[in-house]
Length: 174
Image (cartoon, rainbow, N blue to C red; front, side):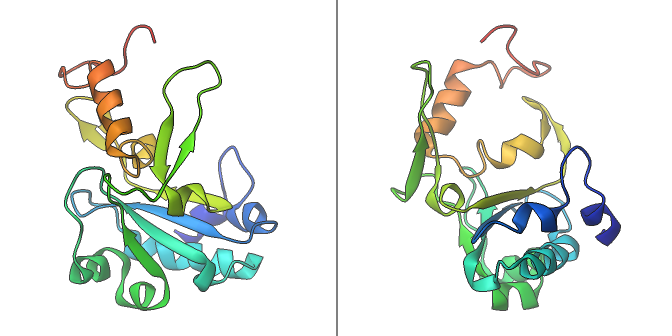
């Protein structure tokens, strides 16, 4: 795991990315996904700390989309007791007003996400990639949408595109 964090593919390594930043949000999938965050998050936190981003300036946001919040015991199982005791963990709430909107430059729909993620200088997504009947896969970019998106953004995404038709990976045209 440590070697993987130090050998980034297609980007600078995490410590280098974090050097000029003051805060970070680590997006982690919820208990419905088997990602072993407890093995990876401590290494991410070490790298952030070495770059100058302290645990008090880091938030872990559970990307649950519209799933239920995870309990403190589940947070400890997912992230490890030491991480939960050291870093603020936030269960995303798709209905919260604590959001940040990103305006579409061509008049398209706004993308509205959790403010803890939107306000962070560095955004890190940690998720497993698993098969998904509607979208083709879960994880990856789904940590952001639907993971930490507002309910309106999630609904727009699900109503506009044929995600729920099994076997449809992406719309032919947008």
